[in-house]
Image 1 (cartoon, one colour):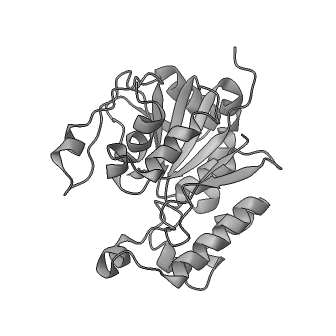
Image 2 (cartoon, one colour):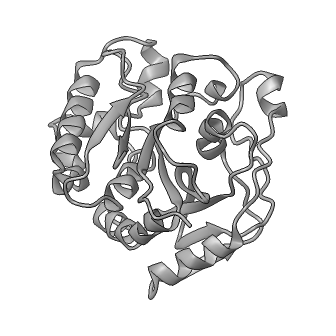
Image 3 (spheres, rainbow, N blue to C red):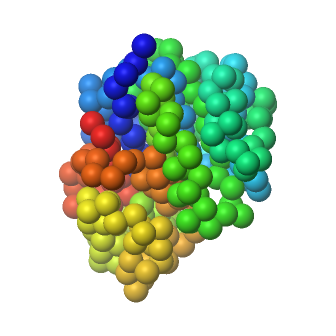
Length: 258
């Protein structure tokens, strides 16, 4: 029986092509398996499942969802047949009470989940459960919900937030991959607060920088950061990865408690 607290991860998942291409980002995900004990299951909160109310996948065999367009056929042909974990889904419901949680037996795993896990656990032999983002909640409410999930780390569950600290694809595609001072400034400010454990400042992310809403024009990619932070204990060390290029603020990721 596992007695070690499992670290928590935030993954800047970027392009789904990282699932099938040999990129530095994919290799960084592969390296994470050497820094974390093999988990009993994974609970992932992805930017790509927005709901009203809280939902959790409860299928024993979740489908692979290809929730994107304009990519090669090889990516659409990719499957990640990891089993689900209905018992973990029920455990989530218990931990979050009295908040109601819908057990969703039909929802599969979106690319914010499987594009990283296919690199970390390529045999698809670690059960996976996905928790939705209730978009009616405030950032503080998301953080508070995450805190109720913290006991899972002592039960062998790897908790992963999957999104991006900076995510403004409209500007990115309009201007190409170029350096944006406002994005780097926001990314650096977020990293600084993460390192210092200043979670209040990260919850109030709109105040991190005067142009914060350029980096986070919509909250769904940022909110998974708060789930990773919410399950941490005070004083747990944090280190960043997939962050080697100072101009590539779209991939910043971190591990805590390793």
